[in-house]
Length: 98
Image (cartoon, rainbow, N blue to C red; front, side):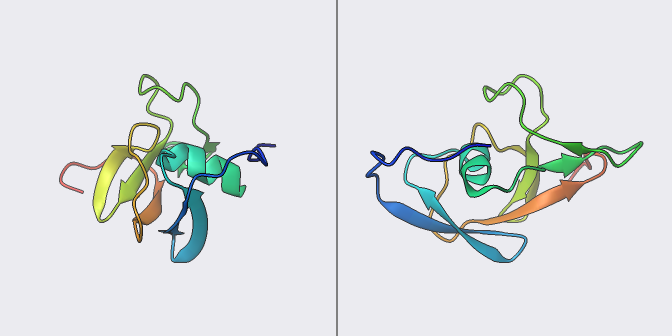
């Protein structure tokens, strides 16, 4: 559904999503990098387990919550990628202290 412009010449950085290496571009947010890589689902809902995708891409809807470097409930649309970043797709409800 999403793909990068061939004119995008920004340097690549490598991030890891659930242990799988993904190429991102310097300046991408986590959500933008995941969408560009084809990894759509960000989290699953607590009640039905339905997959959720980023919706607003500006920090309002909270549908892009992921765990980043061991810290849960991070809004992927607001966090820029960094080399070696470890991202986990969040399953179910938000948890305090995770």
